[in-house]
Image 1 (cartoon, each protein chain N blue to C red):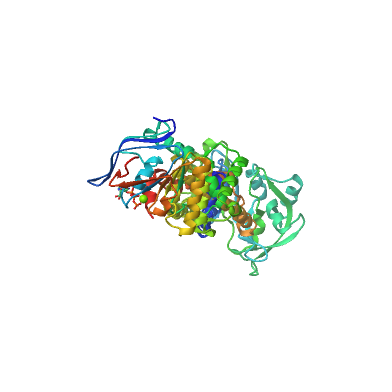
Image 2: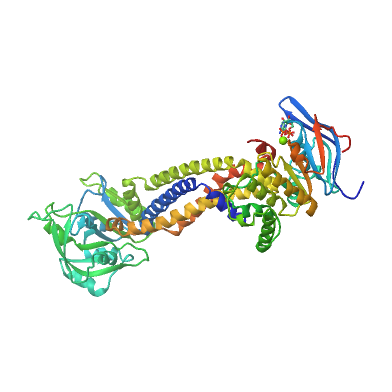
Length: 388
Length: 229
Ligand SMILES: Nc1ncnc2c1ncn2[C@@H]1O[C@H](COP(=O)(O)OP(=O)(O)OP(=O)(O)O)[C@@H](O)[C@H]1O
Ligand SMILES: [Mg+2]
């Protein structure tokens, strides 16, 4: 028997209390693990987006269209290096639960502008350029549906329809691309703008947004201002920002995710601080007499302090670790859900979350254990033993 | 001063301050106690028996005066030195046993040994010896609630002697036990005094219990009423 055995015996003497405490702690750390990972995944997407690519969208709302003619007009702005455009397609296969990011683009210029992001071999690239019904898909997406080069796939849109009222476009996989950076998202599909615009019934010669590169990142601000000025007071005013800012404001449309997550996790931790702290205080109060006996036997006050603090540290560590482990399981499971994988390709329990959890374990242990440990340390033997 | 004086109380005052009121329990109390003695302290309730025992056991201090143990003034030791002194020299036996409910008898007895530099094997040897002495070697794995009152008190005695202290302090050790069980406990204390030369100070209300001691002292209104002390 050592001090740790004593700690263990004290923690487990009331199994119901121990289970409830553990449950509360596990839930809090599970929330931290899951929500922290989601937040991290959102931010990872933003981090990956380039700072030297600019995006021009409709000023009213980025879901509103722009005229195709803007592409050339933007190209003529001083400082612009290259321009491409894209239309959101709202792609899915089989049923709308199997949706993913699909975009109708101008193949050549798109691959030029995204040269630092998309890696695709020469041969499939040429094949795609040549086939109006051709598409290239990211390797992550291809893996999910088992697509291979040469496959003919019916891709549906949850936004657009064709003249015959169908929502299905036949496409041929001409290539599979990978990301140039390690955790680049490749859960998307690219196909010909021409094929899209000529078959859909929404109207002619419109695009979703324009993406451009500048000759030098230092020109970004000036170029963005220039572009937006150019279309001021027209039917379609624009708003140009860096891709990073654009992605950020896109996320902010969903809500301030960081804030929501901080609030939920904060509330959870505040609750367990109260629950665990309170039960620790109660547990020690019930043991006043025992602690006085230990002191009488010769246990020093500092040793008593350590023993009691260790109890809450062990409870926090046990529940916390369990919570972390469970969040691994949950986040792993979420990652395998196709919808989530598309939205959050970088969803995993990052080491930064583990470190954060470990710090929280220490804080939780100290905060819930300090008061009872201090009281136990200060406990007067005579007062405690004379009470019966 | 003879060589085997264990305790010496010199001009000991003990006062409790409760709000504005000051209660004086002892005033100018003097006594000496020899090593190897077995004393029963008797007296009416509130006469200060427990208070005296607490001062001897180093869990309470006199308001004035000096308590020396084997020449060492324990009344002026610091709190932590006093804790160490208790661990080294005193075994406590309480009326209500005060065992840890979540620990087995063996682990309860082992508790004071955690304060010693001792290997696990050594600790187990001492625990086994102490339990054997109180005839509970077969109950080592039992929890206190699985034991009778008398058995629990025997575990408490084993816990008190496991570190081989010079001194055993017992506050009403048989106060919660029936006559037959009490007799067994008292015989055990007597044996520890006679065969192991433990100095024992026992507080009791029970004149029958007091007969097991070598000497009886009677406290009243903060003074010993016996002729020689
Ligand atoms: N911590 C304390 N604060 C104030 N008064 C105290 C304290 N401890 C003891 N007293 C008082 O000191 C007196 C002696 O108490 P003590 O416990 O020593 O008596 P006792 O002889 O052991 O009595 P009993 O036989 O009932 O155990 C009592 O009047 C008690 O109220
Ligand atoms: Mg008393």
